[in-house]
Length: 319
Image (tube, rainbow, N blue to C red; front, top):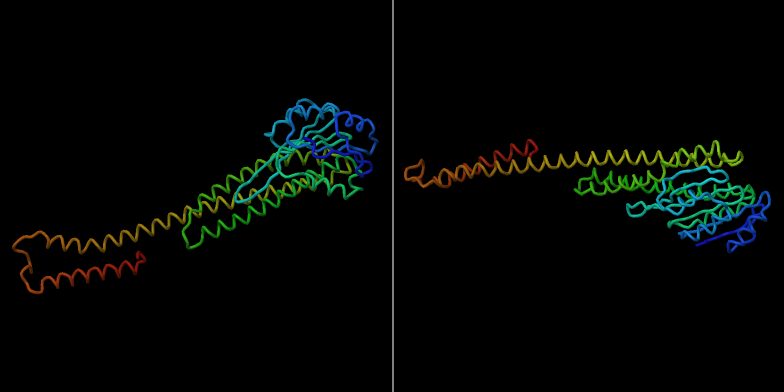
């Protein structure tokens, strides 16, 4: 369905075509610096083809725009450019991505959104800068892509905060199952990487070669933001690897400490068990068996030996 559609003359929003005939008439009446900006969301095949006809969009690009599983990319066709980019949101250790497919022509910009946050804010921000928007559809493209890429850095910052929480938990005295959260964050970081990394080279090439000369500084700025987001992703992934290794090392140390305590405890019980086992054999003739103080003396020897063993284990740090 069409979310918003308008003609912009010298950067000012004017008419709003509401059907295919009005769309064709609007395209035919566009001046040199005028352009049409169309935003649609979750279109059916028929809805997209009704718009693709007047814009003369390439059928392969239209097919890609209908599929919400495209790898981020920029493709150049004869009279228009097709871009696939992913929006990214993060909440409760969960990265969610949605796809936005964009067609840039000489006098139009078409955005095809499959779920995710609305692009209305990017349009409103662009409309507030009339001089900037008067440069044509490339300025509108910059507004859309910049709003999406800027959010990448926000997501990276939130991820870094959660990674710091994991690091603090790993090195805390309290035992916790951090491996589950670390693995989940690594999986979400991978999803984030899939949205950002494939876009770096196409955007850089667009900023240096394909974009109009006056628009290149703006797209180089987007390219810089993508590079910073990519560096943050690499840093986050590296920190998670270190946290996982540290967590496994902590588990190994804790298990060793537990085994030492169990060993020391078993040794303490072994001495009285051995002595009691000897005197529990019920032979008639045994040393001190008929002695009046034999039983207390046996208990005293057991107690002294246990105290000595306990003190040695305590001194060595096993208890």
